[in-house]
Length: 559
Image 1 (cartoon, rainbow, N blue to C red):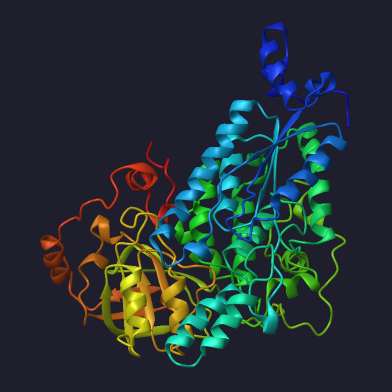
Image 2 (tube, rainbow, N blue to C red):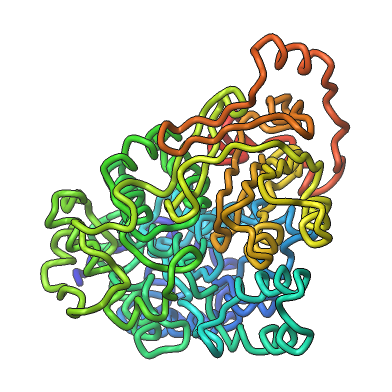
């Protein structure tokens, strides 16, 4: 490390006689004379006891602080909010989930921008706080690193949070007893860490690592492990190196890096939420990325990972065979990734992967390139007269590649779930859940409760679900979300009637309502925009400012 002054921003806050009041306040929180000469590193912790995903992150933040202070920086820990999708799922509270992404981005920008932090290290452990943290760092564009809080251990018999949701459907169908439901409720989530499958948390952690914004292997470490402690300690030296070389998020989060990220998400069979969040992150850093790019990239990228929810294995098992680094090396050697992209190590992606060993022989978690689970992407972008602005489907091929049926329309997630559980929903139905989009919900709730109930009742291959809301990374089956325009904006999904015929074709990427243009126009002419569900507070602000799902549902798109 050189002797040059690495304080681009903090010196404005602490240097000179006129900043004596600032120094005086900082002395009260532990600064000494020498600390004012060090670059200040904001350490944004999403610690909270509202969810097991984040309950351990305060300890990780302390390790980051130790690692930063040990190499000549001055760590300053602060907190960001987080919420729990899993706990709020299926309730009105879930409307705050996507909103929290924007609140977290605002928080990182606000705190580190206000306090003059020279670098930023953020620690996230649940799906919305991760893109939120990245967006906050991207807005400030100061040397930055993301650390993943790590994955949870499985419960007995390979169980996890989605097992509990699906047990609810099994209970309603009479397949799961009172005792069995209580047992799985008590044991499926044994401690700290993010949900154990390739759900949205592990998807986004992998996407961020593939993008180069976290240290190698950060996405593939158990929440409670010595590897995760090392990841935190090593971030200190890494952030100082980024400061020394003035490497910022805009240098790392390039178009090529986003393409790498998308390809790795596809190979892993990741969550549909990755589409929404990567679009939002690209907007924030100023990279051109559109919904159609996922189609173009997806045509050339196979799905290789046999991971839950549609597959067999959990993230903890992928960790044991090496995480995503061997997968990335395989993809790099096949010419699928751009190895020239710079990363938070200060090295290129290719340099980071030089000494990575292949997966052990005999493992079947990650398939070879010549024997994929699906030859192209499971993230299918559909368009047609039902979704002129696009929709996102999660089609692994296991649920089939097309579905035609009659619509059964619901105006909310709760109404749909009730009808699934009480037996009103039958095989062959295409369930429509509308007025759940970014503006209409507001907040674009995830539909894990109804999709899990469908799977738990054994109807996963016999029912499709379409919504202008979105899906949890734990959802699987024939599901289509992010329908744009959404119902509250007068999209065609608003005028579907129960009994209408709908066709979904994941091979030709189409989703169509069996009505003529004239019939659709006639129905839309009679449609009336509903009154806003919220007129005060954060949900009202989000509804007023959110862009469409096809634009990442960001809140600063049209400022």
